[in-house]
Amino acid sequence: SKGNGYEQNRDLINYAAAAVGVDPGLLMRMSASESGFTPSIKHKDASATGLFQFIDDTWNSVKKKYGRDYGIPMNAPSTDARANALLGARFIKENLISRSRSTGLPPTPQMAYLDHWLGTGGANEFHRALKDRPNSSVAGAVSGKAYALNKGLVEKNGRPMSVAETYNNLGSLLESKGREFGVQEPLGGGISGGFTSNAIRDTTRPLDNAIA
Image (cartoon, rainbow, N blue to C red):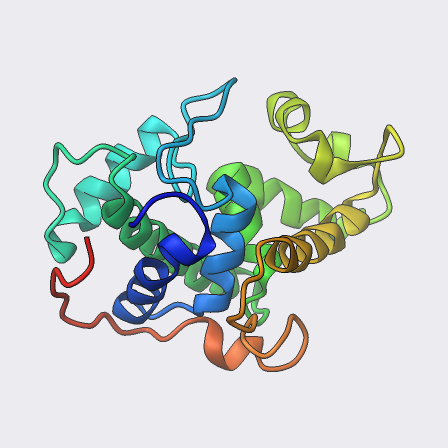
């Protein structure tokens, strides 16, 4: 990382995307939405920290599981931009593969965002609601804490959106965040066309330490 901002972290996130095998356009928009490309940022009401806003438990778990694959020491903090980008990419890839297999649906940006935001259990509940009761209030599909901390994702004009509206809103949010920060990498060809083929490549490339 070369500081805060899209251009300052663009090479790093592209490096992580190529190394792990995830669509760079998705990673760019996830980081834009999560941290505004600010490696040291911490959520004011939670432990979420860094480019991809890992909470402490998830950071330690993903680091323990994959850190050695990427030369990341176990004492690396979540403010370490290189570690956060690589493990963020790996976490998103793992979630996309798992979610696509469990739902039988192609991977989408919304899938990536839901697992990152709600965790596996919370995303499971959301997807069940999306399938069984898409027009019901999203307030019944996410935890009270997740709702309270992310009202911009779940409310419109001060009222809770439906589950289906929230799902669609996540895709729109990622696109708008990309525009806000001037992200130039396409979102896998777009949310509807091309994303499936580019979103995940089930391979991991050897890494170097070219980007700090």
